[in-house]
Length: 317
Image (cartoon, rainbow, N blue to C red; front, side, top):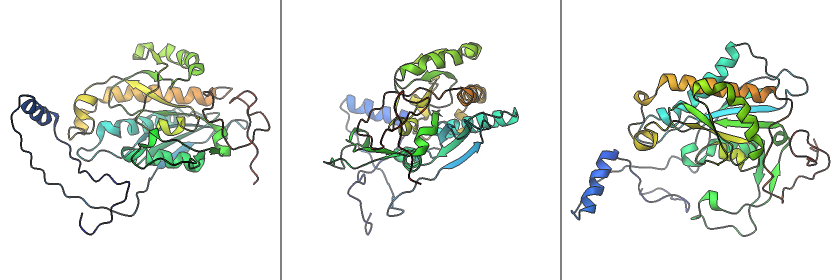
């Protein structure tokens, strides 16, 4: 790292990934008090003053004059960890999102609302792609009055006031798949209790595909959190675990050989159905109570289908 400028926020401890069998062997030796010496040769360099997030976005335009400006989104992330090719994390989620949209196009569906697909970059570094998109299109947080040290993880830091955009009012929902190649078994509501009965109706016809579970819990670690953070409906599907956590996740085993085509086909069908159902509802999906009472936009008139009595001040443009 000689000659390179190191940011105060940079992780200066070298990171390496090894096969779990090798790691566990080292662990067993240490547990049995056998001295272990490990030699690692790591070459690294900084590639620029800052890192960008690049997103690939496409859409099927809505056809209902009253609803076409409202948007239903689906996505996955294209970037992967350093030691594999990222087939299950998250090539699987990306190809499922593309296949779901392809299914709708092949069926000649004319959705009432616009259906938009976004494939993110920078998820592994901190949701950079989706957070950048949300910041640009939906809302931004001001710096808190008393900023916390850079050593505090981003998800634990206090935030200032949230300023939202007009697009924030028209984003109906975002669906994400990022837990490997396994079949979809249900969906997390991200503690949005009002949406559980709606999702329960949607999965009722999908029992023969193995989709039966509605979880009120939230789940983290991927791009739907960028939406949830600003009060927008963002959801992650529940999947069969397969060998995702035990073998492929962030390892050199994360290759094409670990993908299961039938499972991915099932996931694409489920995702396509969720997109279509969302696009065709008369009302927008219910949102959780807004978590930021300091929200800066003045409330002057009702926003239909979002919050009863809550409205946003029209843009000055």
